[in-house]
Length: 145
Image 1: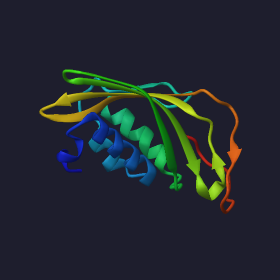
Image 2 (image 1 turned 30 degrees about the vertical axis):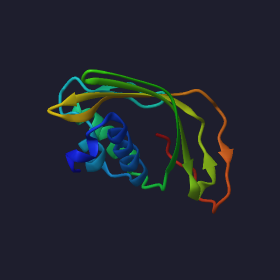
Image 3 (image 1 turned 90 degrees about the vertical axis):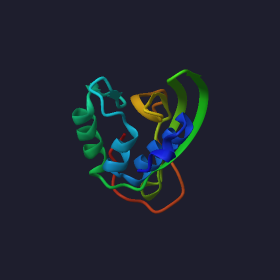
């Protein structure tokens, strides 16, 4: 991924969700900082620390190779110096399963390193509990984020 695509926290976030939608581990990890202090918490999951643990988690999530689409609603953004914090409502839609998964509240933290914004933390928590049917073809049950 070209670093020019991440010359702002908003562009880094866009690259994160594009990689997520496409299920591309290398593109996903290109968004993340390479330092050992990065961390990730998937919904109802443990704290993952460091690039190897985080890469492994995305490989597992993407193993299902499900088409995904995201609806993102920004609740707040804070940026000061080399740090940016975005708090979002994130809804994953699985078109093949005709499902809209429960909305997550997500905190994405970015740090500017050598002029490029990189993700240093992604923490997603479920705030709803109901999966809703949406229009489209049906398929077997899906793996969550």
